[in-house]
Length: 264
Image 1: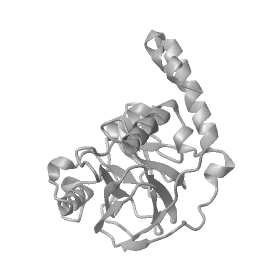
Image 2 (image 1 turned 60 degrees about the vertical axis):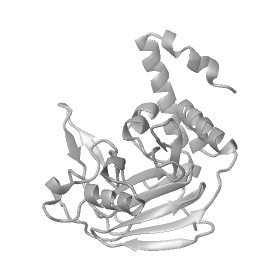
Image 3 (image 1 turned 60 degrees about the horizontal axis):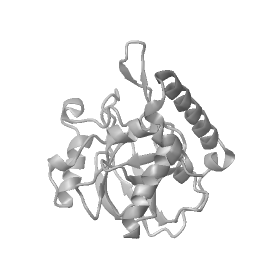
């Protein structure tokens, strides 16, 4: 069923009607994400073509083709891993933290959610997640927090340089395995290190360049990584009933925009 008639009338809704619509959509999305299929433990990744271990304080860069899947594991519960993504076919299109949160009406990036670019297209989909929490508001640490130790901001810039880009090409990034809370005054707080064995799985929805740094979250009280991050890369195209592609109206539109680019 087309969503366009409803979407075209959004500007006619009162604030109360818009809030009610939003809350209904979020309840539906949470119910879908909590379904057994979405929460099932990840099995063997199909068509694995690369595995790698990222030592504490180090980073990697990687090219991914559309529908490659990268599984990122945190076996020791280290306090964060910084991630940034670019469209490999046009690096002026890159991850947009603000749109990813705003368009999906949530800061909770978990199974079913997607990572948007600054052009309204989907860069990657979160197809599996153990729920450790991933922060795209505060993000990874920088020199001020690391105090001489390797930090996420500088490592992502170094990663960009490997692809011929500069620091201007690195925007606000994601800190994986980093749960953040807010208090009554709106202050951000680090909710503690993730459980050992935390995992998130991303499917590339475009040809991507990624930089991934094994460095802490900016608010972590421990500003040195405590263990390795492990990655595994395979390949798996989405099924017709793929959760991410139908999770929210905003995601549906993002995938339509993305698919149109590859249909040209």
